[in-house]
Length: 287
Image 1 (cartoon, rainbow, N blue to C red):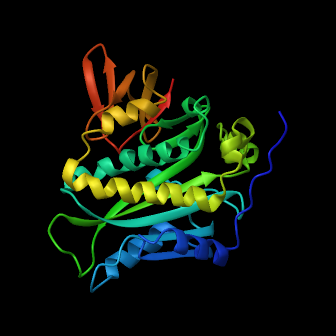
Image 2: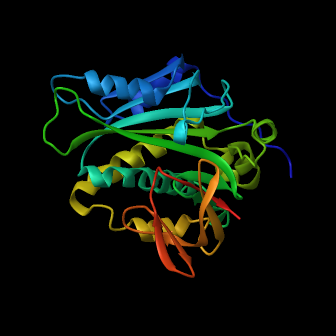
């Protein structure tokens, strides 16, 4: 199959201008050449914010000097090879529901990207619990979802600011696979398999995901996460597989993955019955 050149990232100022015009629902949109971490920047801003609420916010960067993934892992990136941005949203949830945001927003992002693909390609874009997006079972994108108390403008006891960050590999999959010693995918691979994907510009990818997050989070105060298990089932790459659950590199449980529950926990079945694995405490690997 012939190669498809990856569409280049617009210059930071051009990216910011495009997104500001096309995401009017976002009160603040910025795109910079480099920063330490877009998630960390928005967390710090949310904690010090005072006065009238003015969210959601979006912050993207061509390069993150200390980009973070789950469990404190670093995010390898270089300018032009990765699409990285974070969004800050006001959410009104009990503390026990905050961990559910991680798999929930992962599903929303996966659905948004699946929506541009031909129907034959969509099953190849899946989720690995809790929120890694995969192409042909190789990691394409990772999410980091964090929550903090709003600053002095906090409205109620259940008012939090959720920061959702995503890093999508646009190129460099071969080099990343070698350096990380595991299979990594990038959007150029998706583009070679799907014509519609090859025409999706980076700023359009940002808009699709950011708007999908905004629209879905606007609904959870009223309907909660009741549809999460069914939606996750549509993109689940682990269901029916034997998986190991690891904590600090040590296997703590093995079983058959059977989906997620309404809290976004991974459900495993073994000879002793069903077990719910909590978001943010473990990682799952296909055996």
